[in-house]
Image 1 (tube, rainbow, N blue to C red):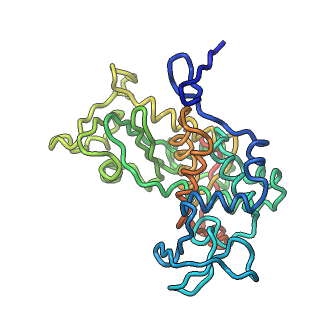
Image 2: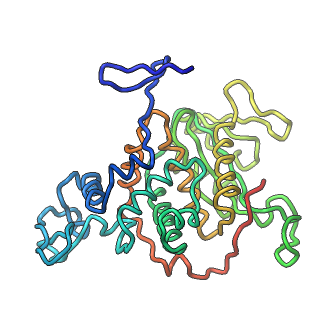
Image 3: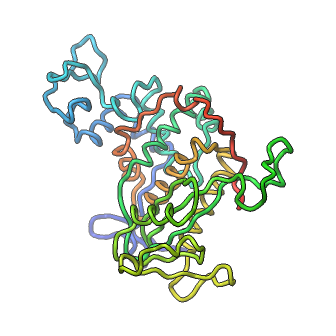
Length: 341
């Protein structure tokens, strides 16, 4: 039986001294956020540090509280002469849903190991399916607004999202071959013991992979990949990266510290999310699903409290505005079946 000890500050940790994160149950969540007023106060504290600033005037603090005729939470900006609330300019912009619903969406997206479906959210919150679907896509858009690079020892790999040609209906088959035909490529980089970044790409050629690595990996890092020919373009000749490979084509998967098991574990979680939770994703929206899965893994450290993870997500909501009509616009792309490689 695991032994839980406490340090001088009252924080729990296990026998090895590793801190145990404080989780939040659903009853606790609703006690913390019993109504929209409590949710708004929390959002204002996280986004504004408790002091209202206008999102339209690049953070102007020349604001005053709205008149009594306006609901609670409205403020007046003197420079731009417009009213605003804490949701303006965020993924909650112009929302008609309760703020309590949004807080629950943030919580569920972060705590559900393989994500949550819009149908499940619609049932739990008692809202229409399209409302839940729109909310989740805006949350996913916020998940992808973090800007960082990885370094030290990193692993790079690509995967393909889509169903097998043999499993498709006759009218859906491309009849253009097997393997990756008809699938969407996703490339990712994972720092050993650190964060992951991933994104869909149109192709996995040398130029695309090199640009992805140079844009997301610190110079001087050690890069581990498989023996795909596209990785031969890494600029190790000028000491920008130290590059080593494992020869998957020859059955080699681990050679000492050289392997890509960490990033492949990321693909395993992503594909289980698609297969078991989301079921179908389209190329148009695939990037946001990848954003969600990546953010959840990045903020899922067992030493990080649930409320801290929620606050990290809320801080990324400014600018993550998506209109429903843009989400449903027909681009001629069909849904991708469950992920299989």
